[in-house]
Image (cartoon, rainbow, N blue to C red; front, side, top):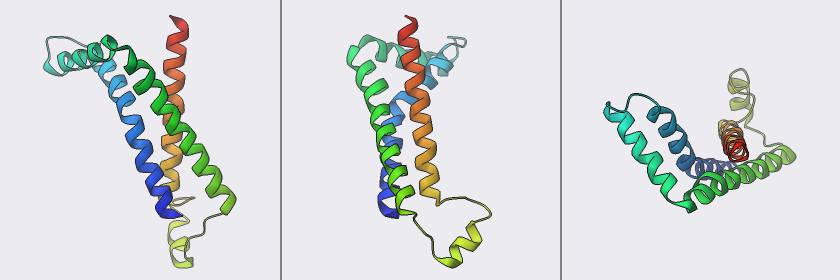
Length: 126
């Protein structure tokens, strides 16, 4: 069970990376173009905007898949009430309320929801 949660967490990270790269490039590219990082960021934004499939696949479909996978994993782990060994539960209970992989899945699920909301609202505004 824990192995599957780690796999979903890694998959979510891979699915969110293209959209996160675009958002980061858009924010960095808004700065002074004479600096090298801003120029590279603008090149990334131009690459995304020249290809229509990037909007649908990389910015909407992949984060949506990460959102669905995260929700399914969190519901499954919530229903099964995954338990840590007693020694680990006592030492980690003060630091983390859930296993670390589950927290990472929850964070990636919230991140993908935020990315989707940003792009959908931006598309509706235009």
